[in-house]
Amino acid sequence: MRNRNYNKSIILRKTLKYVIILFVSVIMYPNSAFSQDRNKLEKEKIKLEKEIASMNKILNETKKTKKMSTSELRVLEKKIAQRKKLIKNINSQMGMLNNEIKSTQQSIGELCKEIAVLKESYAQMLRYAQKNKTNTDKLLFIFSSKDYKEAYQRYIFFRQFGDLQKDKLAQIQSKTNELSKRTNELELKRNNQEKLLQQELKNSNALDKEKKEKQKTVNQLQKKEKQLAKNLKTKQQQVKKLQQQIDNAIAAEVRKQQELAAKKKKQMEATSKSSTANQKEVAANKAAIETAKKKNYTIATTPEEVALSSSFEANKGKLPWPTSQGVIVSQYGVHKHPEVKGAVIENKGIDVRTTKGSAVRSIFKGEVSRIAKGPNGLLVVIIRHGEYMSVYANLKSVSVKNGQKVDTKQTIGIVSTNEDGISEYKFQIFKGTHHLNPSIWLSK
Image 1 (cartoon, rainbow, N blue to C red):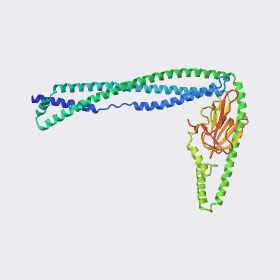
Image 2: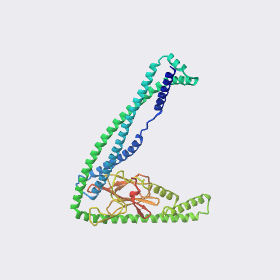
Image 3: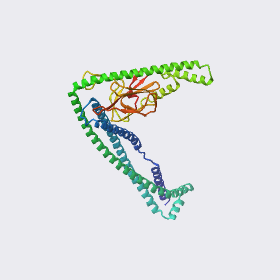
């Protein structure tokens, strides 16, 4: 009898140990990492969809004229490139979602196994409790111990056994709830997968259509290459005159600012021995001059101008676009004309296609240094941001005046639309008299 009770005690200890180990085990799920990456892709997808919608709006404005242009082709090419990125994005999301589904299915499988083990363990406990349902059985089992230590351990076991039964029930309920949650997640992910498949199909069809449209445009432009070459020559002459006008205006502004800086320097030297307040101002101006020298500034030599220039520099790659929507149809620098053989384009800024009536905005706070009329009769606005200047050309109207202070994104005018329904403006950035690539200064 004593040996039988002792063996029963060993079996129960082992069962209790197994149950406790199972109770404290935790399964970790990697879905959070998947979700984080997919959220990033979803934000990128939304951005791409907005850009494509914007380009569709731009292209739809000239569809009625039925006149194909190189500008039209550039927008189409950009749209196709963005469409390809969008399809790639959707495929990446689908790949991640497939991994999430597999992970969730695996989690469900593990939970089912856990619940089965827990239920079996609980059933064993119930069976044991049924066999030892009287207090007399419990007392006999305790008093049949070989010594006081074993009797105490058996007593502790019975005390813990009741609590463990409750914990086991709670654990089964918790795992069952988690299983239900995972099953719902799986259903949601499968629905999202189906939506992505539909989006991928829709965008693939749209891409095929856009490629055909592009080829049609290329063919039409090739047929009128001679006319394009003639128009390009006329346009380049106008652009050259406009650029000369802009360069002259920039050079004049630089000279003006240099003269003001020299005049201020003389005034500073003349008052350097006066009051303490003036001495502080002189010290601040001297510090600004030293900073300007270090940063290779030629016109920003006052503390305020140096601070503005530094702030402009700090926003490189983050400056807002001059219009809320637009597509670059002519890049910065020297490059071959894509349709006219042998023709070369030199652009000291970028040409941006936008929608009719678009408001043109200042890319940064500064001061309007000049408003002029270009050789094509359209308006040009130059804004100075300390050492830097931004130029906005081909505006039909302006809403600022010379010497006016402007803020970032403040409307300065309205873009012009030509007889073919094309709304396009030129944008340039200068540091002193040196022109810079605007594409690397504007936000992506």
